[in-house]
Image (cartoon, rainbow, N blue to C red):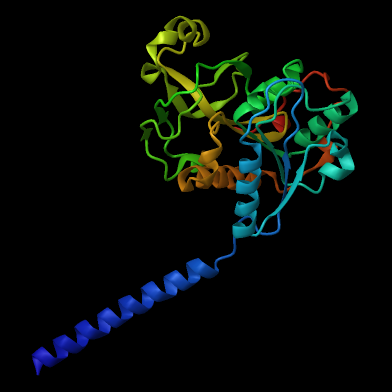
Length: 293
């Protein structure tokens, strides 16, 4: 009799466990996306100079992420879209391998800046670091500006802040899986918070003279990815992503999705009463309202 009761107890516990797992999976499958119904703008304009062949692949990747996670994606290379009224509809802006001057007028630059001051979100992918190289405010917003990269090669990148949501799920060390162009940055803005670095010791030593020249005082680890709150806006930058094939790799596409989730979570509510600039070069107000801890 005792044996029968034990068996019944075991079967009951097993059935409860199976039911709990089933309910958990069902809940996970029906749980709404945190990005549901937000709208993002993917901007792809390039000024005079080199244009990456990864742009179409990156756009397709972000559109696919939008379809899978219920957020809307607009794509444009027309700087005329940069007006206060038009930008208000977007939770965040994604510059994917933009390069050089991407605005036609200072009025467009001012509209971009005011969007960020109102609490907008910005994501820069790869050569976005070489965008608007003559605009100091924009370079500060990015966290710096492009300086140089060694020839295309496989090398190692390392996560140095595994607690940050944008690197969740990535290996702490990517042994020549994500590294392809090691971007060196100049004019670093001191407010950035770095999550991932290039391991310069794994680069081809044939370029050691230039590596030493451009790495400044960083030693063998150099910033590859970071985030910051700048002048009211929320920014996430990844210098990775040169190869168009990366935009089909689950690890990299999920990484971009996590960046979108991170910035969207901070940028859903914009307040244009906080947008104070009246020109592209209005001095930054270093006040509590414009910067978050």
